[in-house]
Amino acid sequence: MAGDLRPLMRHCCESHHAKTSGARKTESGLSRLGSCMRNPFTALLLATVVFAPTSKPEIPPNDAVRIREFYRLAAQLQDAVWPGWSGTPAPLLLVTQNAEFLTHHPSPPKDFQKIGDDLYARPRQFPTALQATFPAFGPPSIIVIGEPENTEAKTSTPWVFTVMHEHFHQLQDGRPGLYQAVGGLDLAHGDNTGMWMLNYPFPYDNPELGKLFPHLRDLLLTALNEPDLKEFKALARQYLMARKEFFAQLSPDDRKYLSFQLWKEGIARYVQIKSAEAAANYQPTPEYAALPDYETFQSYAREARSDTLSELKRADLAIWKRVVVYSLGASEGLLLDRLHPEWKQRYFSRLFTLDPYFEY
Ligand SMILES: [Zn+2]
Image: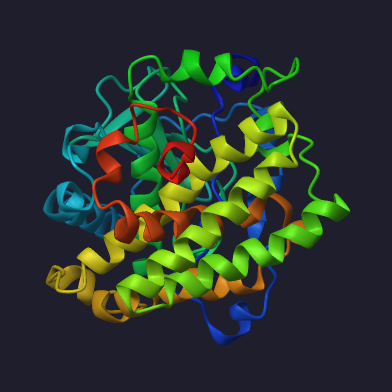
């Protein structure tokens, strides 16, 4: 029921950084937002469909291979990427053309039919291009994602790391009191669908911000590209001052919104990059390496960071709008790795803002 699910919607992820083809590299960040700008619940308005009594849906074999690889990969590297990540439940709902497949869920809802070991299915209800994480059936949060060809990832390896990004949202959502704290931001302004997280009227086209943003963006990139530690620290200080100046232009609500987005989506993208780099020497299973669109983890790891940095280089606040938070927030995470290597320990003690690390 759409009406039951809407208040639970938490966010919808753009997560295109991944491996991009030459053609996709020319796309603007805005166009790559893809399905996220559409209401993900449109499909729920379709009449409910039931499987014929004799039919038992089967998960496409390649999807099953990718999902197994995600869980194997996550188990091997998640704690090296983020302390304590491995305790996070990771239920996943795969959306295919006609059916949805649920796995790793503690109590699958009644409309799901058991079709295998820890695998349940029901007729499709969500859009096939959706990539989001939210408590669709009540807590815990579920990764709801389409097949690679229907999402921004397009192929298997970027898809696996998109799922890692979503899995980090499960860690965020699993913090006690998180949902109440989101409500406490008081930014919904009467919207109880959760869509405010995408549609909040941030002044993206404010001329003053338009002047300050390129300076902010370029200072961050210059600092990140500086190999000498002393020079890096001087550049980082300049970035902190520019960041303060930028935030000082914002109203209290706008400041809260931008901080929330950088904290949530920017750091999820940062984790996606760090996961890719941590997997550079990961040995995939033979079944995964045999997928027709197989791309090595080494090659994906090589480009993960530079893809996001080149995305930030092109970031345009007025045109891309909310999409700038992915590359900007991820780059702030990379900056903090050098500036305050212990920053992750404090990430959950001050929710929804990275400001404490920049108050030096
Ligand atoms: Zn996300």
